[in-house]
Image: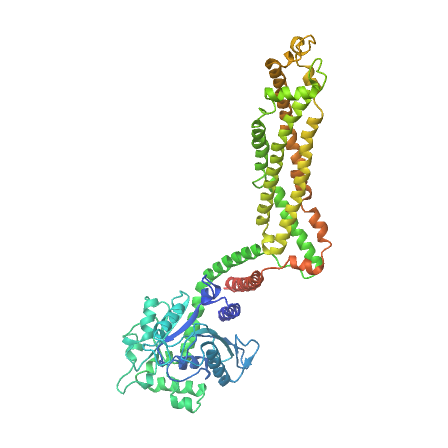
Length: 610
């Protein structure tokens, strides 16, 4: 099981290196799911001495008032017998400290870098790893001591600030609370016990430690607490005897201090029967054993969190897109692939795989027919205009049988009005194709990654559509011009002939232009124009589809691809410029994903071996 604790320590170190811990994110993190031990106590309760006793080294800053002004995340790693002892700070990677007096100074200096040389506190933790064959595998978090009064140089909110910081750690369900209380003070007023009971009322996560037992008033002892008869906790109280100030001043080492501690409990009559479960060495073993059990019980939850987080990280990385190759060939290939993705999405909209293409059919089936029906020929086919055009067409010699030239002029002037609906249909389809281009760009995930390329592709696609629109408009208007330029003769041959009104030369020319005769001409022209409208209703959509829709599917980005091959390398690179924030986010996500995958593999291997 010791391997499991070592694994958790390893994962915690990786989490701290990535900032994947505590307040770094509002979401549950792998760090939060890993059990750790938070050391809680009032100022001068002996917290630092307990930690030093567990480690076996004198390495923590000392002094009066608030000494611990930042959380200290202390990871202990048990080395092989005979291995060297050293310490490493997260903020000083690859630098090993073998002089623990230098460790103490670096803790103080790093605290001052964050808070200044004041008595302010900071929630930004210091991460320290200690490797030694004389420690057990543990993660301990030393928190600032709880206080009741702000001292000079501290804000009035310091009392509440410290309490809030402590709570932010011990409220986590996977946090084991090590409540430090001095035995020579009334436990009823113990800050550590009070706050521990508030966040852990059942005591499932709380271990009580009594310090300064050797400093209790003469005639008093802590037997009732240590035996569980007073201030009972779920887990028995553990008493420790710290080094005295005189010992610290004399630099008495921890080995000698631990020996004196064992001698004190074994030789003091009141505690002799409890000596086997007293002392800092016993405390370290109990905490390590309990931590092992907690880690084992939390493995299913940790595995679940890791699997869920891996899925979320992979999804976000997919949304952010892949990083681009550094060489020009790779960049060109990447651009081509992104453009092909966009082009495929655009085609899917037209082909009905994605919505939008049906709106083009609506132009042909509703908008164009409705526009043709709304055409008004009253002006062209008024009695006055018919008579005027026929007379002008006859010139100096009246027509003999039917006013053919007059018919042609009337028909041409009427058919020209069809150009308006024809152009409107072309423009409507052009507008819809532009909308589909914008929609396809927004649906191409890789284009979101590169704003410059997105703009270039969008502009190139719109430019192509505009050229296609111009060609389509030209072709569509030519259909109208063809109808104007060559009339369907069979239509007129089938018309009934009226010799009396249409071709009797004995009648006066003025009789031939009576209202009945003119109405008949207007009716014939209107019928012919109606026939042409019916024909163009079907031909105009065919022309538009051929010149715009199918051409857009076939060659929307052809010109862009041609020009792409001529672009200079610098310009090519600029198309793939990403938002620096996106690049930074992707890098962080990839590192975090690598951490979680590694943690998943290692935790799974340990879990299956148990």
